[in-house]
Image 1 (tube, helix red, strand yellow):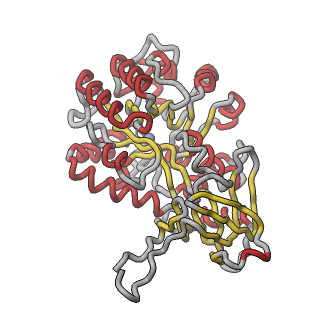
Image 2 (cartoon, protein in one colour):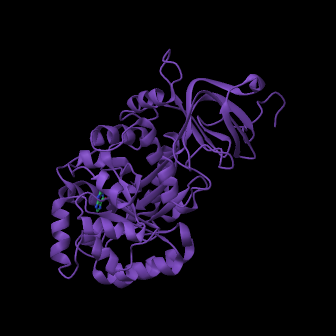
Length: 420
Ligand code: GUN
Ligand code: ZN
């Protein structure tokens, strides 16, 4: 380092003072108007009310510390065309999404978009995600190898009922899938796009491969009535849409199913029995007019639930925006207190991705991975009120509301100044 150059900023050990709001793994929330989070070696050492011995803590001023967000369902190749609406799900896919995803057959496009996407997630406070890439072999590989990426990913395979540029013959798709699952193992997401663009043979093969390599399974379920009807006509032998996946051996505790809106009680019982995760995507559901996830029924049945942006149907990558829309659409139906929205966007997502021991809450032993949200000036440090204000500030806009992001104690956003 040159004499006089600034020290590289490293907070792998340190203490931050701010308001704090976090779900707790044992249940409930911890809310501190004025708290201190201490961390050492990249892990949280303590979270406590600020006291006389905390003079060394860096005071973040009017800020609220929350755990890093987890986006449990998002599409990498739709980031650049997010928020472009054309009616309901099926025409939107055909007119806007599939033509865009065709461009991701070019590995150069994938490489460039992956860097942009990973940095866009982090700048919005999203520290882990379940990502669907384009239906091309290798389209998730850059992301799975990205040093800052946490979570799972895999291509949105299609072997029928789509444009030529995206549909791969069944045997070739299964061969690609098997090779990638063997390469990436437990972090790989076996991701048939959804039942209508998958043959029964492909789904069954995908189920076998996922089990063999202990992979995630990631797909869509019951987002739209026309889609459900299409599945009924393609799979007359199945008892239901969920049963199509069940027969293929795709349902288990590492299975994430986006939407889960138009499901029967029998389907919800099946998802609960298999310990699958239903991913609630409220901003996407609003945008495409897909309907409201029947959250109270899912809770009653004991189905696990996480939260996703579903960009590009969801118009905004910020989980603050997803939480805001969640509170609007579920008001009067489910618990929509700000702390509950936070729990779904952090702890429940971390559980869905098998990251609970490391992420999802601000508790000793977990990684010092958190987001500082800007509180309204002069509004005091009331944690839940502050979170609500931050959700409003995040309304559709890049980076609004997020003042800083730390990963394992290192400040990543805003990025520390480069070493000269
Ligand atoms: N169902 C199948 N593919 C998609 C997709 O790309 N987005 C959404 N929202 N639903 C889907
Ligand atoms: Zn989706």
